Length: 365
Ligand code: UD1
Image (cartoon, rainbow, N blue to C red):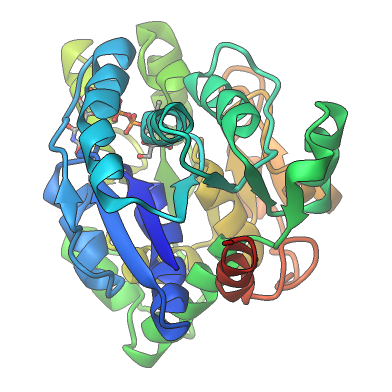
């Protein structure tokens, strides 16, 4: 069986890691195509090396641009590559421009395409990711859903027959990284590289909050971005803000200083260090989809700076709280008790990658 994975952005590299391992273990052929959507070392290479993913077989080096230009360049680049490799399956991941480009290119070439993390919905039509998800699900031949809720969304859209519940591959990635991080003694020590005094690591009480902000809806409107950063600055614990290049670029453009009040800006972390940083934090403030769930899996309270989430399961019992920076006192986050860890239901058992590979192999004729 020959599987071509199309990836391009950081969260896709994280999902690719357990899949690449499972494809190799099953003895199938795996071609990795990197669109080049994320090209900074911190967002790309570091993830391949850190997660033990083989080097991409093909690199399209598409880079940044408007949505149309970026997605169009991917389509044009992917066509000859997918044609040449004659895959049994094209596998696309998540909700980025690389996802929709991979799916669209494959269906136009009559190549079977499977969507990993199918069926997530924010129902916010202003998010580019929402269109990427919906269109990819409707184009794909096989929908690999992470949760029963995702299955229900797909059924409601008439896609039930193409849907299989496989669990969430992020559980596989997160648990593996936590093992690596704990074995390597990562955590407070590693974070000191940020130039932040985080107090003593390990057994002492968590002394910092971890934050990431990168969604267009938060970064691309100066008023909104200022409100978010003001709220972070007022928090009662040091806030380690791991700044995505989009955040840095917009803040600089609008003349907003990142390092203010409680905020200690740092650069994005490699995955195992990131998991260690969440594990060691008093809580998380984010607008990332993946980080909300990692906080949940690691038993850390999370405040999500958005009006909706694709992962409503994390909202149960107030583990994760949706917050407008203007209407919610982020400070309450620090006082919230950490929930008990919830590995397992509803996100799966950490064996999703193997299940994905068997589902793909079973459908090759
Ligand atoms: C993309 C995904 C988002 C995902 C996120 C993870 C889309 C529409 N969005 O958002 O779903 O959660 O990745 O990080 O696909 N930039 C760099 N270096 C890089 C990459 C980006 O400087 O390596 C800057 C560029 O100025 C670029 C901007 O960040 O214009 C935005 O990058 P883009 O790839 O459009 O989307 P992300 O915001 O990273």
